[in-house]
Image (cartoon, rainbow, N blue to C red; front, side, top):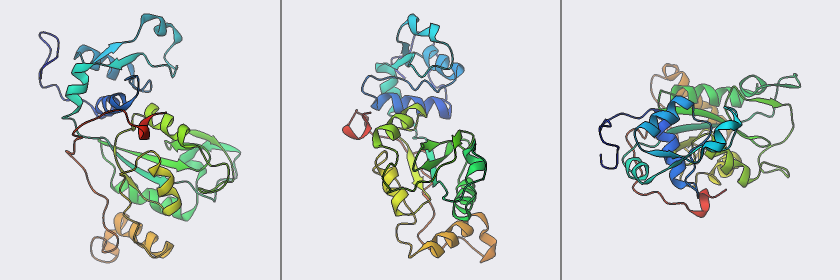
Length: 253
C-alpha cells in the first residue's frame, strides 16, 4: 500500500469502525473523520498514516465533543477504495411505546412490528454490521440511545429533517454503507434521503402480513421448513467495495 509512513505495516486489516470512519470521512465536504470513533480507532488510523490531526487546540474539548479531531488524507482516500463498505440494517421505530417517559430506544419501542423487524435484523447482524432504529422524530438511533417518549410517524408533519439524518449518519460513521431497511414504504423513503441506493427487500410485499411473515422466516426459518420465498433475503454485501468516493449533494450536511 503506497502512501503509508516508512516502516508502517503494509497489510494491516482495519476494524469495522476504522473502515466505516474512512468511508464517511471520504464523502464529508471537509474530510472530517467522525468524532464518534474511539480514540484507539482514531490513533490506529493515524499511526497507519491514513488520517491527520486537524489541530491540537481541539484536543482540549474533551473526549465527548462532537468536534472532529482528524481528517482523512490522500493515503486514506486511496486505502478506502479497496475497503468493504460497512453493513447497516435499519428497522423502524414503533407507534406502541413503553409507558416510561424516557428510556433506551431498544426498550422504549415495544410494538409487535418493531420487535419482529428487530429479531429479523439481528439474524443478519455480525461483527461487520450495525443495527440502527429509524425514528420519525429523533432520526438514527442505536438501541442503547436514550430518548423521550413521543407520538409521531414517518411522513407526518414534524418528522426528522434530512439535514439531521445526514449529520447523524456521519457521526455514526455510516454515511456510506451497504444498507438494508426492514420497514414499510414510509420509513424506507425516509432512509433513502441518506442512502439512495439502499436495499428494501419488502418493496414488493402486499401488506403487513407479508412483512411479518418475511421477518418470521428470518428469525424462525424452521417454522415453514426453509428460507423465505417472499421478497428475498437482504443482500450480505460482504467484500463489497466502493469504486470511487467523492462528496456529492446526497452526502453534504
